[in-house]
Length: 173
Image (cartoon, rainbow, N blue to C red; front, side, top):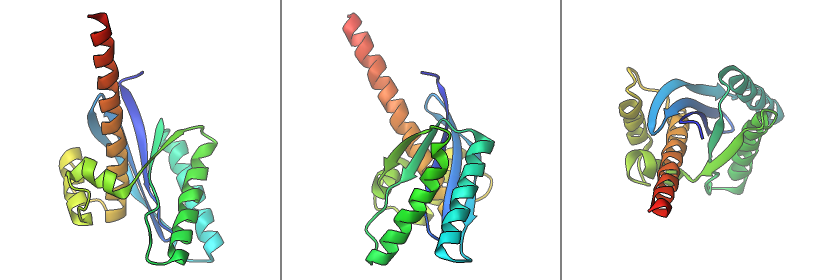
């Protein structure tokens, strides 16, 4: 397994979808890019198409190795949950032509990995993203959440790699 891996984090939303690209060299994250896909105008189908096309363009430009996406949480109403699920699907479908492996993480799991508290606020996530990636400015809340998803996966990957290495060393003894 290569020690460098480029991870695309996605924070899905039916009106604003955050994305974040992070390179991991071993367990060290390095910021590549982040932003949002705004799909606030037009019919719902047009908004889904904008998410699909924009994420497809991001994948083509940055060529990530892995996708880390936030799972859908329980919304206050079923209609919101359905729309969020469809936006998430549009973003994921945009990655399928590139045959990227997709990893899913619960919002609490992402916050725990980045902030150390599964109930962290969006502001706390933004603050930790700035610190972890040594950014000069603050990404939007949605971009910060996407970067957090990418970092969560990077840390999980590094942990799994260390466990495998430890198991191999233990077998050699």
